[in-house]
Length: 303
Image 1 (cartoon, rainbow, N blue to C red):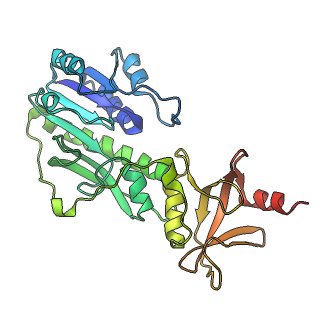
Image 2: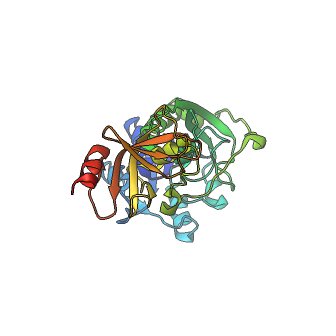
């Protein structure tokens, strides 16, 4: 039976590891990250899954550590996978498994290499993304493509909704290519570097809203970083206010300046740089509970 080493984290990591275990594969090593108290745990624990299946997980924050390399070497894997593990595995580790080392990435490579690919795809207004299984190399997300599968992005989909589709696609890609990988005959297609895109790691501060942008761009930012991420925020309501849900109505904002607030018929709008409005549907002022816009308006106008 093929011996498999896995580095995994997050929802996709959990789902792909579970798929291997449910298929009866021999997983001889599981490396993952420690749960962080400052990070919303919206995904199940890879470490706990491993323990439930009789595997002692290794908490690996630095995969370049000689001790980690030795642990993987002792496990003697035939195949190695990285499923949403956040660290870049060193060349020496990638060379260990005779049948190769492969990564699952949450985009249709070569587009959206790097961290947070689903969030970036939603923020950039893409109508599709997907999951890619590819060869791991010294450069992140740059190795030959084994297989990939696309998923749609609707105009009001949140990044979490899209992420769940990407995870399901990742499991399907892994499952259908696993026999080929085990046999050492998986297809490999070189990535087209001329089509490659990569965006920087996102931070909470990147959620600040620029009202001079178009209404669609503001809406795309909100849905890209809404729950379980920190959210898009503004100070136009007199304090830091996070916008959790918006829409783009067919409503012009002529003769208004970007960031100007409009309340009409119990609905809350903000003008944007393209003379269109964004409607605010759910928001949260700092130190207060999240609320729907109607409740926010009622509180604002109550003497």
